[in-house]
Length: 226
Image (tube, rainbow, N blue to C red; front, side, top):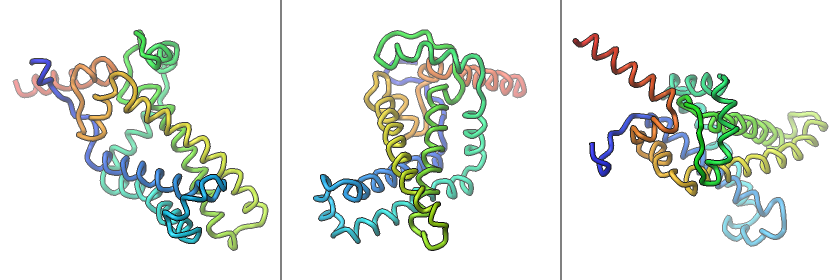
């Protein structure tokens, strides 16, 4: 197989790709519409939304779309969703060894990272942080949206929790974007979340344990056919 036409392996289903980008778009709109509410330095953004009331309306609509991906994936690809949950909750020796070598790769150097699962240890941490910050934003945002149904203490705590969740989630997103777009070798990773497949060599190099499982499955299929 020539380098110009590498063999590809399936990585993500269409529903997973769709909800990933839906979630990303909703988060971006939430972030932009929230900025003028947090600081006067971004008051000029109110003009984009037609004023403070318009910004709040857009923020709440985006909040609904931010929650929708969970509902959609549970209906369209529950197997993929629960596989993701199982993976990010599974931690073994090779996962912890990942972090010893990862700083080298993060800064573009050569790293001897041990074979990783379908989701490597870095992706597992990113997923866990994404879930935690999303829970902070959604739960606190719900209380802020409907304060009349909650005790005053809950409403008062909702605001700082929402602010902390926003700051943490923004940091997670920035790191995720860098590793997905700006980092050397990120082209193949991004293809997985746009086209749904990745080059076989990329799978072998970055997700060796998953790649070995694919090869073992292929051998078993060949034996059954033979």
